[in-house]
Image (cartoon, rainbow, N blue to C red):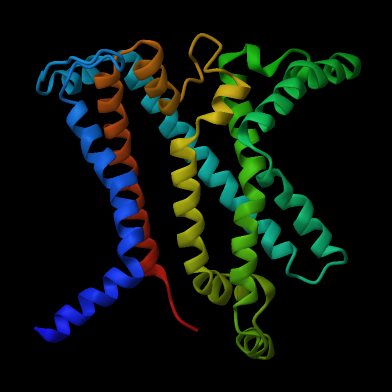
Amino acid sequence: MNKRLANFKIFLTFAGVSTIAFATVVIVPFIYGIYLTFTNWNGIDNKYEFIGFSNYLSLIKDQVFRDSFLLTLKYVFYTVLFTNLIAFFLAYLLTSGIKGQNLFRIIFFTPNLIGGIVLGFIWQFIFNNALPYFGQQLGIDLFSDSWLASPEKAFWALVIVTVWQYSGYMMMIYIAGFVGIPQDLIEAATIDGAGQFTRLIRIILPLMAPSFTVCLFLSLQRSFMVYDLNLALTKGGPFKSTELVSMHVYNEAFLSQNYGTGQAKAFVLFITVAIITLIQVYLSKKAEVEA
C-alpha cells in the first residue's frame, strides 16, 4: 500500500501537471464534442435540445457528405501511395553516396517548412498563370488552361501539391531508417553474391519496416485531416468537386451553423481515421524484423 502511494506521489510530481493539462485541453473537449453530436446546437445560441441520433441519420442521407467522404478516400489513397514511393526513392538515392546529397536533402525537405496556406497560394499562381502561359507558348494542350478550373485536374493538382509538400519530410524518416541498417549485413550479402536488387528486396526492405510504419501513419493522418491546403489551393471548387471532408465539416459547422451535424460528421471522420491507422500500425508492426 505504501509502495502504491509512493508511486502515485512520484506520478503526481512528474506527470501530474501535464496529465491535468492534457485532460483539460483534449479529453474533456472531446467528450463534450461527442455530447454535442446529439444536440441541435447551431454554435451561437445558448439554448439547444437533445435530439438523439438525428444528426447521424441526417449525415447518412447527406449525398454531399458521402461524395466528399469518397473523394477524401481517393485523395488519401493517391497521396499516401505517391508520397511514400517518392520519399523512399529519394532516401535510397540520397544515402547512396552521390555528390551533394546533403544539399539535395535540404532542398527536398524545404517544402515541408512552408505552411499549407502559403503553399496553396504559390501553387494557385502556378496552376492559374504560369503553367497556362508556358502551355500556350509551347503548344502543350495539357497545360494550356488552368488546372484549377477543371474538376478532374483540380483534384490531381491537390494531389501533386500534397505529395510535393510531404515527400521531403517522409524522406528524412526513410533516410534515418537507411542509416540504421547494419552495413556488415549488406557487405556479407554482397560477398555472397547478392546483387543490388536482391539486397533491396531481401535485406533493406524488411529492415525498413519500422520506417514504413511511421511514414504510413503520418501520411495517412495528414492526408485525412488536410484543410489549409484545400482551402488555399481550390477552396473546394470548382463546384465542390475538390471539397474534402475536413472542409465539408468546417462549412457545415461554422458557415451553415449546423454545429451538431458538423460535429457528428467530424466524429465519423475521427472513427474512420482511428480504425484505418490502427489496422495499418498493427499490420506494419507484424511485418517488422530485427537485424
